[in-house]
Amino acid sequence: MAVVGPDGSGKTTLIDAALASPLGRHYRFKRFKRYFRRVLFHVRKGTDRNDLEERLLWLILPLAWLTFSLSRGLFGPGSPLVLDRYFYDYFAHHLRDPARPMARVAGYGFWSAVTPRPARLVVAMSPAAVVHARKAEMTVDHIQALYRLYCEQIARARVPRTLFCHTGLDRQVSSQQMVAFLS
Image (cartoon, rainbow, N blue to C red; front, side):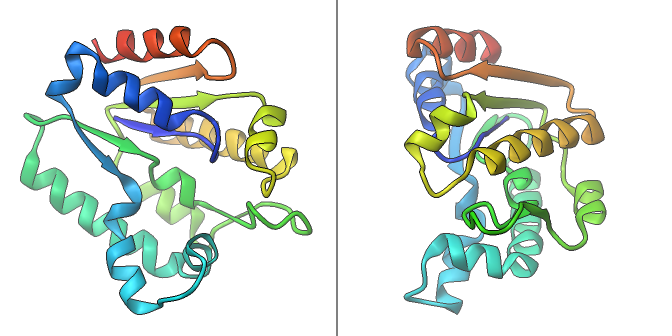
């Protein structure tokens, strides 16, 4: 299961609620960035992580795909995994550059086709203005474009179960929706 959403949309809050529930002990939690950050930061040290990730997507996507596929094969379906972020979050450029419109990565069609389909996907939905207030480096237009990209990826991959969880409301309600989705 992957949880996606722009920075500041409530992903961590949803994951914390899921892991704190009685069902949480049956899941493993992993940050998607862990699939590539260790290797990536041995390559380039002292650079802002978000800038570095965007410039090195040609390395991140294959590395994340390989590591994710291998770990999925090693752990199998007996140990469900909850991911903070997913490949979809790296299919866009210029999310933090207000002077440039969001653009899709080179090879977008290829990466969309080879990305493993999550069994369940949670989209942390919060109004773009709320996310922008939390993370001012992302414009409202970029946030809305990222949500459109998620919807396109869900349709392309035919994700079997998707929860669009409104995280801009009461945290308790959002947490209850997440726990219900797990069960």
